[in-house]
Length: 321
Ligand code: 13P
Image 1 (cartoon, rainbow, N blue to C red):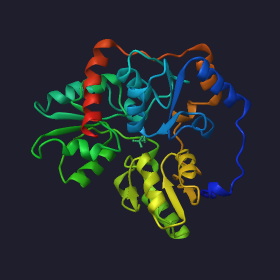
Image 2 (image 1 turned 90 degrees about the horizontal axis):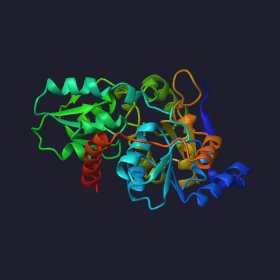
Image 3 (image 1 turned 180 degrees about the horizontal axis):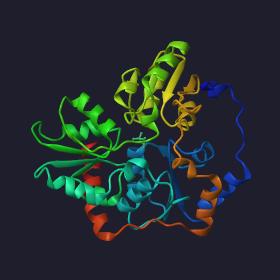
């Protein structure tokens, strides 16, 4: 597949906001709402959001939101995390069917049974999991702070890391400690293969930045492995004028705005011209407008689950300061 090349943002004529984007901004004001958007959602949404960021930045923004309504443009576990951290707010989601393959790979009942095999082990769960799995965890992590969170435990502490085995193996490499890894993965990132990335790197003579949800063999041919937020600083500081990005391609919109003088190339997985997340793609500007108009769909979390999950998420926010 031919890769998609995005020329420097600074050379592009700026477009005015569309009628529907303006309607979203009007409704947002009317509802006293704040729009939080993950780096992986459509550019049209990123352009009207109050905060665009990674899972960690979005968790802080949700916890600290002062508006009456939080509209979360991302996937269900992110909106659920917002409701858990700021339960007095109304939390809306453009499409509640936007889930996550990692979340699906780790049902709470199976994790509860797994924990019984390792009495005394601490459970560190990647934020890409359900509220019920968070409630079974000692602490949560994101890709941006996973190393720091794991290193917070004494070296001899036994750790179960769920649900992403690839992020888990990357944390093992970074920390030099073995963990008990849950066997889940992100089906989008896991589709990258080393051969395609290596060939692209040679053809373009440009460095690659990838997300730690990629398989080890793919990560090993990349120049930097980091969370979506950290990609921005890395792209800015790297001397190359062209940067290849091996993660969900919508990330490039944020990168272009923040690093407007560089060319970004979306690294293609084997069977498509760019990597996409079918769940993130369910967020459309029309659904964003409609959820603000109808004040629905709203996110709710079982109170008992919320209480336990909140403790594990707040511990993460405290430890990653
Ligand atoms: P971050 O938000 O931590 O960069 O992770 C992105 C991601 O891949 C979520 O599935």
